[in-house]
Length: 481
Image (cartoon, rainbow, N blue to C red; front, side, top):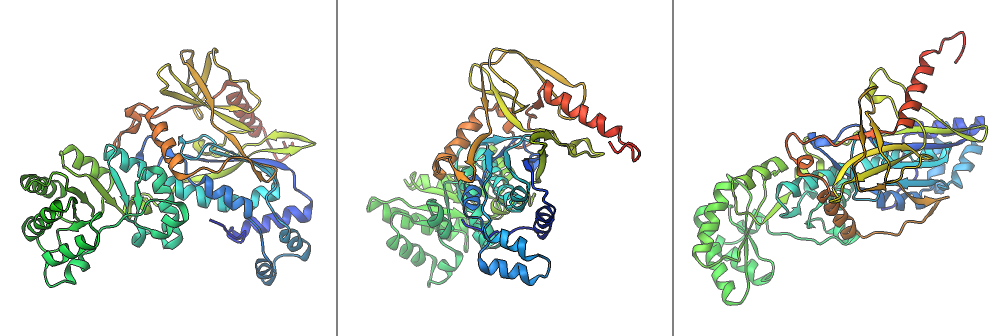
């Protein structure tokens, strides 16, 4: 999807004008990361990169945008002339979309001049925060269903049409098999699916006629909603009648439950269908489903084939946003890149300085052990023992000397404003999610109380961070240091 460069916060533009007028436009390096997994989970799924790359490739101010900014009475003509020719000319490093990610590690790195890097902050966070949240939610739902068929039905409950479209994209990446959103289906080539509403049933003289009519029109996709009146009464009995009629034609139907005790009802419905020889009839359920509800239904042994998940999937449900941030890691001083650090009384909010790379360590079974954040110039190579330092606690560390392979996670996607990464299809990204999660022990993927995956700093990065913190503590108004 394309975005106007006006889709930014005003203070980005006022800061940019300040840099421009003062001639303060050095090369910089920014990191995008987040501080905790959403939903009290053990992992997150990186999503939105494809949209971000497409956006940066076309991010510009047309004349209408320039005229609007001029009307605000804030911006000088020279700066507006600069904006009229704006395009992103920096480098973008990122983890592959669909990568399993963790708090504290850079998932995107932007290298550009300060003005360009500042402008793209808002749109970068807008795209990546939301889509990562929804992809993570969907992966949790998929995991709870034990690999079941997840149907994203969230359009009518999403935050606006644009939120719905982005959510459909991210949900597919996270593991949804299809969406009800036909625009998202067209834009992203996502399979589209649907059943029927209660209004269809109520629009006919009786329930049986509504079922027959639907099955006649859509013999290959007849999912009958059986709880408009009485799921275990007329609903299932009329579905059985139509199911037998369609079976004689070589077709199978499905039924959907949208209310009530889904565990109890699905078991009763399955028993009735099987008794009538309709073993191929599928059962779909919906009704404000969450990963916790799905986990409980699976634990109950509910015979459910597919899950229509809407509200909680496309909005994030219990969490409305991912707290991703974009922080300066290094800036050019006298022709050299110098590390920077943001300090805070809250240790969690003190940033890791410098230009960084993230390395993932795997054992002989290709299972992930831990992630290590290193300075870019560090030589991280297999066959060596490494100290993994806790990002916040000074003396907490462990030594890892038993591992098989290591992989760098940040890869260059845009170079000097030109996209160099191949465009990926969503099925490829979705498969990366599934493959990636398979490399993590099930304890990290628990819906409740997951094990904490270790993300650590190298000795060099830890020393640099502590040194910069100590230097800042020596500052006084008198010495100006």
